Structures are given as C-alpha cells and as structure tokens.
Length: 484
Image 1 (tube, rainbow, N blue to C red):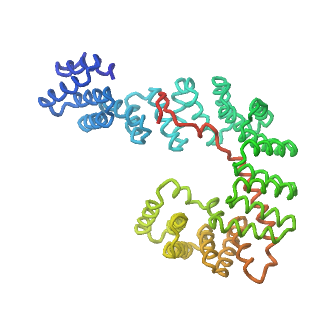
Image 2: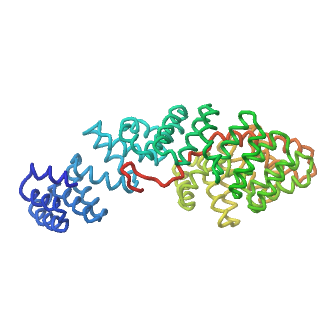
Image 3: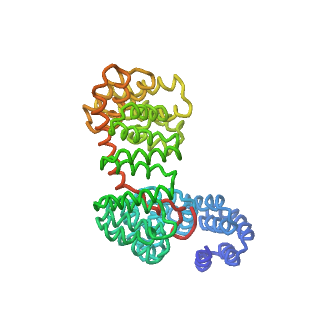
C-alpha cells in the first residue's frame, strides 16, 4: 500500500501527493479526511478513491476499503492500484470474486508470480485443479518455498492422477518438514498410487514404529501389505489401527472386506461386533456383518442385520451411490429443493433434474419426515423414470421409498429393472434382498447376498484407491501466509 502511495506521489497533482504523504506516515484518519475534501473538488478522480481504499485498509476496515477500490474500478476498470487492493481483500476472504481481478492484473503483468500463486490457491480451494495447475507451474519458484502451497500443488497432481509428479512434490515438502506426519502420509499415499509399494512402506515406517502410531497410516500400510500379498501383516496392522482409533468406521469396514476376501467370516464378525459396541447405530457395520453372517451360513442373524441396517438408515445405499447427493450436501437442503424446482420449471422434461429433486426431498425428509414429503419424493422419482426409463438412480430411489411404504412388489419391480440396466448396482441387490425377505419366495436370497458381498468387496477395494490426502484436512492457508 505504501509503495503504491509513494509511486502516486511522484506523478500526480498536489491533493494526491498530500494524501499519499499521510498514508506513508500511517496517518490513516487524516488521509481519509484529505480524500473527502479533495473529492469535493474532483468527485470522479479514481485515484483518490483508490487512496481512500488504502486508508481504510490501514484502519483494518476492509469492507469500506473494498467499496472504495470497487468504486475506483467503476471509474477506471484497469487501474492497477485499485485492482491490487480489491484483489488482496477478496483473496484474504477466500472469495472467488478475486479471480476476475487477478485475471485483469495478469493481463497487465502476465509473469507476476504472486498473482499466479494467488489464483492457484483460489482454484485449488474450488477443487478446480485443471485451472489451478497452470498457475502453480507459473509461480513454482514462489510456491516451492511455501510448504502448504507446494503441498496443494502436489494434491492437484494427485487428484489429476499424475502420481509420480505428486510423489516428487511431496518428497520435497517432506524434506522441508521432516517431522510432519501428514506430509509423510501424503507422500506414502502418492507413492503407493504410483505403484511404488516398497517406497511407500519405507516412508510410513517412522510413523508405524512410533510409540503412538496414526490409525490412518496403519490403515494405509495394511492396504499396501494386502496388495503385496502379506495378509497376516495386513491383519495385524488393521487390528493395531482399530485399537488406536476404535470409533473409525472405515477401519472396521476395511477389516470386513479383508475377512470376506479370505473367507474368514468368523474373524470379521468378531471385529464388527467390537465395532458395534463402539458405534451401536452404525448401519454400515450391520450391513457388513449381515453379509458375513449369511456367508457363514447363519442366515437368520444375517437377514436380521440387513433389516436392522435398513431401519437405522433406509438411504444407506443411496448415500453411497446417488450422484446428486454431493450437491445437496454442499448447500442448505431447502435451498437445494428450491433450486431443483426452478430448474424443472425451466425444463420440465429433464429427467435427471426430477431425480435430483427427489433425492434432495429424500435427504430433507431425514430431518422432517412427513407423508407429504414422501409423496413428493415418489412423484419426482416416478416422473424421472417416466422421462428416462434407463435412469438407474431414480429406480433405486423409488425402491427405497417403496420399501419404506411397504409396497414390496413395486420395490421388487424397480430393483429388478435397475439390475437389468446395471448388473453391478449394489443398491438394487440390497433392496431386492430386503423385499424378497417379505415374500414367500426366498430362494434367490442366498445367491443375492453372495453377489452383494462380492460387489461390496469390489467397491471397498476401489475405495481404498481413493484415500484422501491428509493435507486437505488441515486449515486452509493462503499463499501469502494469511488464514482463510
């Protein structure tokens, strides 16, 4: 700010020189008074509004500062001091409104590394790595000196499946922060994804050998050992992980998958029993245990667990597979419902939007279940299927409602239709098991449960390949060191 003020003072008339002098002396209130007086004479002088923004910034009144900068830009859209001031405020807020301001600055100075680094950080926080990576690359000498920003670059490379490059980046971050267990975990994860299993285990070794090992690191090491064929080590590591973090549902599910893969159903059941003591309302644990019970020929206990899972969470399979749920989780559910209603008004023949409305209403109903809500879910799902009979998620959702209403035959019809369209639809298999349980024809159920077990194992195995970088669990920090 003071540099800008000094530059202005050398090239502009006396009123601006006077304000700039006050700013250099940190006399911010005086600078505001001088700006007001000068603006009475020249009310459209964008330079004075930019200086007013600097004075407000000096007083930490960022809202007024931003208003002053934006007014300056309304008078002179390309005025660099106002662009810089407004962009800095919006960036520190983590606002996407900084992006067009920074883009404008790049049009003037395309090689400015600070501007590129700020854009990279903003795009990263939007999960837009495609846009972020070029800016990381054009600010690499700046980013490489800041471990968090460099880690975000590595995270983008990981998300973009450039695992070798990501591993190289995290290796350099670990050199800077050798005691940071999150960075060590991220490096091991990227090395594993780059098919460098031995390197990943070596990277994890200091964590695993510590007196208080991290449960996620233990879980990752277990996954790697299993992939390498050392099941006993994988089991031992998972047991250790569960002892370290007994309320982590993912660890119990990982153990259940391992037990299923090696036909060790009793061992898996014992671990899930322990998990249910810690997490007595965890529907996913009942579902996993039910599958293992049935595979071990304890049919009644298995079916009881599957029904308990459904009672605890009728949308259990839905929350794992429905594509629109992520969108509704990011917003207030009431707003999501309104958004989808408006979209349907604009395009009433869009089947997918009807499905998303049904899903949002279903999620909304988990906190305020009413007959009207259920009827709306059913109507929206039925309309989606009418418009697109091949829309599998809508059929799954309708089967969920049918089971809740007790419309067993319709649930069976929708589940079979979904399976004809997608033979690997876990949700449809699960619903079909629950529905057939309530009929006189139960002959299919054992084979369906076996099929569900195989599908769950495959999905858990795939899930292990999408472990989240620990970097992303840390508080966000802008590349200039300011917290967002």
